[in-house]
Amino acid sequence: MTEEQKHILYNMGMDRHHLTPCFRNGKTTKRNIVWIYRKKHNCWHYLFLHLTLEEVILFLRKNGHYIKRKHPNDWEIIFKKMTVEEAINFLERLARIKKSQSYKS
Image (cartoon, rainbow, N blue to C red):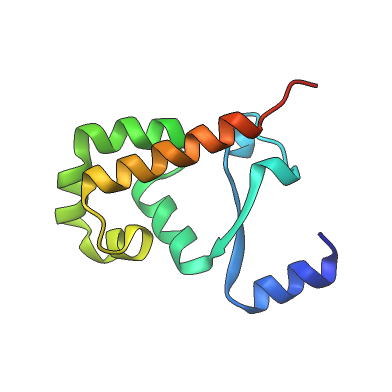
């Protein structure tokens, strides 16, 4: 991605999000970066701090109903009208896609 493309995305209110956090050995590579809306990015970190995708899934299995009830605005920004079960299924699909796209150097 060029600097110009990054600048355009940033001006559209988007931000880079590391799928595996840098401090947990996540690299700043094309495979580990997704661009998401800044508001969604902020809500994600507010609710899940720096958990990995797999950890968020486990967290939601245990605490999803509480999180959705306690933080409904943040939940809606991230998951829209999804139920907890739908959100977990969605994240599990993302995890499978991420895993299928990974490769060993």
